[in-house]
Length: 288
Image (cartoon, rainbow, N blue to C red):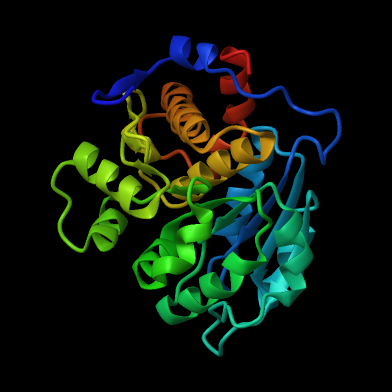
C-alpha cells in the first residue's frame, strides 16, 4: 500500500479478517485502561466497555482512587484499581504498583481517557512504559498524547506496538505546528513515533501504509466519542489484531455506529454511551 491512500471499505475489511476470538476471556484478550481523574472517570469506563463490545475478554480499569469504588459498582464487568490523586483530583501517576501485574499481563493497554494534568500524565507514562509486557500493545489517547514529545528514547521499546489516536488539536501538539495536510502529517507522525496514527479520517503506519475512512457522521463529534474509539482500537488489539488492522477496523466500526445512530436517533444529539450497543451489530454485519 506504499505510495497511495486506500479507502477502508467493508470488502477490504472482510478480506483483512480479524483473528478468530478465543474460547475463554483470557484467550479473547486482556485490556487495561489507565485514566479517569476524579472529574472524568466516565471516560475510562466508556473506553473499557467499548473494548469489551468489540470482543475483548477481560477488562481492568485504573482510575483516581476517589472514583474507583463508584466506578466498580456501575461497571461490574471490570476489575477497578484506585490510583493516587492530587488535591485537585488528577491522577498523580507517581505510583502504579497496584497495576503492575495487570500491565505486565495485558494484551493491550489504553492510556489517556479522563487524564487532565500535563505534568502528572508525563510522570504516569514514564512509570507505565517499563511495566508493560514485552508483547503488550499500547494505545495513547487524549491528554496522554501531549506528553509523548517529552519522552524521547523512552518510547523506543514500543516501536511497532504503538497506536496514537489524536484529534486535530492533539496532532498539532505532537507536530509542534498547525496541522497542514492530515494525510502527510499523519504519515510524518507515524514515522516519528514508530507507530500507527489514526487522526481524523486518516490512518498511517510507519511502513508507509495509508488508509482513509469515507464513512461516518458529524454526530460523532460529541463528548466521550473519542474515548469509545480508543477503546474499540484497544479491544481489537487485545483480540489479536495488528496495530494497522485495529486502527482501520476501529475507525470504520466507530464511524458506522455513528451512521446507524444518525439514522435511528437523529443527526445530532445521540450520546457516546449509545455508540456502545451498536458495535456488536456493526461487527456482525462485517462478519467479524
